[in-house]
Length: 67
Image 1 (tube, rainbow, N blue to C red):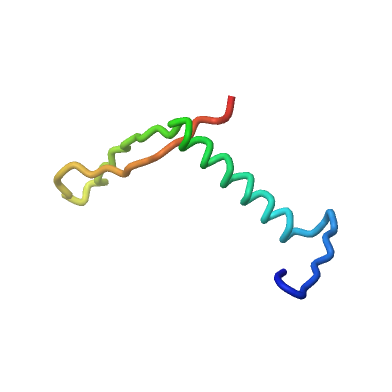
Image 2: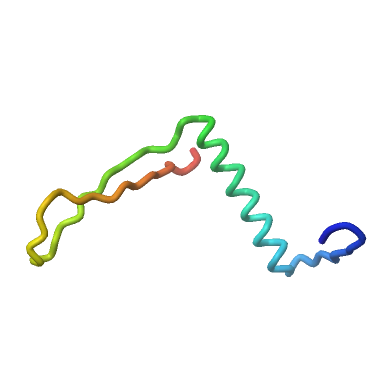
């Protein structure tokens, strides 16, 4: 909704629940950044017999659950 518009909210309104959940996640992520709680991991990727050579990995960033 914006200027000159009206939105009637109902407890069953999925769009509002989704938006509320997104705002909660944004707050949690900002707090985790402020508290330096993200942890960087690397996970090795192994070839399955296709003859690939070299080291391959994917980077993972994790945020431990709130205590």
